[in-house]
Image 1 (cartoon, rainbow, N blue to C red):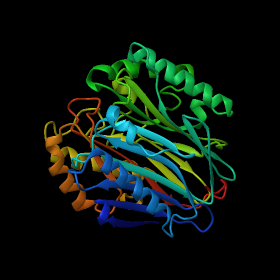
Image 2 (cartoon, one colour; image 1 turned 180 degrees about the vertical axis):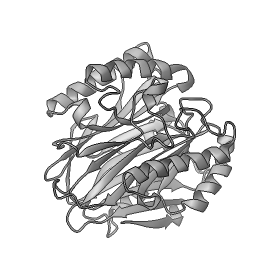
Image 3 (cartoon, helix red, strand yellow; image 1 turned 45 degrees about the horizontal axis):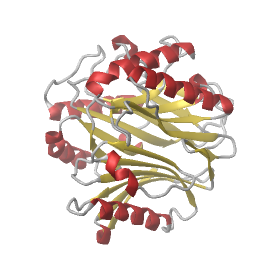
Image 4 (tube, rainbow, N blue to C red; image 1 turned 90 degrees about the vertical axis):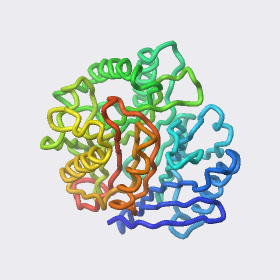
Amino acid sequence: MLVYKNIDFLDLSAYARISSFVSENGANEFHIMVELTDKTQSTEIQFECLREVVRRLKLTDDLKDTVLVLKRYFVSDAINQSRFLMAAENEAVSIVQQPPLNGTKASLWLYFVSDSEIKKETGQNAILKRPTHEHIFHTQLFEREKDVNIQTDTVFENYIQDLDKIDCTLKDNCVRTWIYVQDVDVQYAGMVHSRKYFFENEGLTSDTHYIASTGIEGRYIFPDVLMLMDAYAVTNLKPNQMKYLYAPTHLNPTYEYGVTFERGTTVDYGDRRHVFISGTASIDNKGEIVHPLNITKQTERTFENIQALLSEANAEMNDIAKMIVYLRDTADYDIVSQYVEKHYPEIPKVMVWAPVCRPGWLIEIECIALKAVENPQFDNF
């Protein structure tokens, strides 16, 4: 069972929302969303506050025996703000220009795991070492070629080659991707075309499976990067250890409207289940937008769809460890923020500006859930 906790850092104009998954048999996991509250402070001071929050968090009783696995920055101006990022040690670091909608310069997602080792083999991946599995986080995969098709081709080529070096494949080991597309209304179709080509070559089709993913607006520190990718893979997975979620009463298969990702993916371990819910919007099982132009109703339907996906994994909303809410229109922030805080106040979350791949979708939400289960056929996490 997850435990939620908030820590206020009043002197830093910041707070951290924490979800803790504590296990007697395996590692403990912590997802943390850090948000700033004073949007009048300078860029330098805001990033200094984030840095100090991370330092203090590492000293808390809960986290003192953990390793920091992942830091993802959601920033308002990636090109200019990259100089303020804290130096990385062995953790994976991701930066994406998706401005926090509370008006501050940056928010931060942190992932900590206890009783583990973290190592970095290249500048673009970090490996969390556990007794049976290695968890590989690739971040900031990009190329600077002339168009989004070539960039997508090259990013996937390089990623597949990296997986091959550790005896992994895209089909059997990649659990989750995050794909950020600059000017998504224009460039998304090119990324989708190239991704589909690679998936087919790697044996990922509508007859096999795809990969849980979020494909959404996002910019990088270089203005000519049109497509940026983060990815997560796990080694030594057994048959049926990874499964896929469909919720056919609420959602249609993505290939029906020309895209190739799974609505959700689960990875089972001996003591827990990881549930990765892809970017989910207000859609029905025919692929149609539900409640066009109505942000309140779209928000309600989006959560209904997430609940349907979680239910397939025998999970509930109170199993969600972290949530990212993407809005197309900044004017909808107050409405959605009030709704989310009323219904899901404890879940670590961040709300950012990031148009979804279909203009009619006003909101998209992704999440990770952790559920205690007993699977004696698998090793503990």
